[in-house]
Image (cartoon, rainbow, N blue to C red; front, side):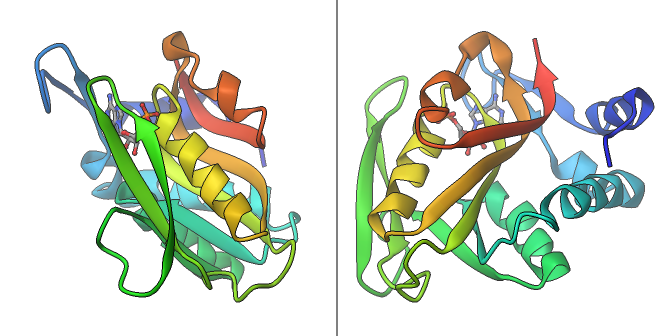
Amino acid sequence: MVLSKEEKEYLYNNIRDIEDFPKKGIIFKDITTLLNDAKAFSTLMQHLKNRYETYNLDYIAGIDSRGFIFGATLAQMLGVGFVPIRKKGKLPATTYAKNYELEYGEDTIEIHQDAFHNIENANVLLIDDLIATGGTAFAAAELIKSTKANCVEACFLMELKFLDGSKNLKKLTNVYSVLEID
Ligand code: AMP
């Protein structure tokens, strides 16, 4: 099911812009307002369910923390397992870790080494709310690769097109963004 122009507008209009958060110059795309609107949340999730039910997925991996909301919901709808990719120090069992660059400094994300139960070439969908520079998602796709699973696609609710963050990520996996923001 392809989303109509009206449905895309409906989703977009339920995302709130917060200026200068978390720091000056950033326009933060707040999805709490979309989650809060039952029709918007359901439209989005039904669209993702329809897109991915033919992908033969084994797992969905969500990025800390808004990727957990969409990822876990979709996993339940598709009847597959959910795997969290978390900020450093949050996962309790043995992990793989990956550093990535931020605008200022760097950060680390982790995945449990046995997250996909060592199923070789498990089909995994990576999901997050937004791709900006693409650094986080690139590191997450590399982590999935570390587990020997296959990242079949990276899915975002929003892509900030002007940052071209998906360019690098496309070297590792397919990229799908529900809303492209100029
Ligand atoms: P990046 O690694 O630059 O692609 O940043 C992506 C991560 O940061 C995602 O987990 C997003 O949730 C978050 N993020 C980056 N920029 C924004 C923004 N303008 N509004 C909301 N979240 C953002």
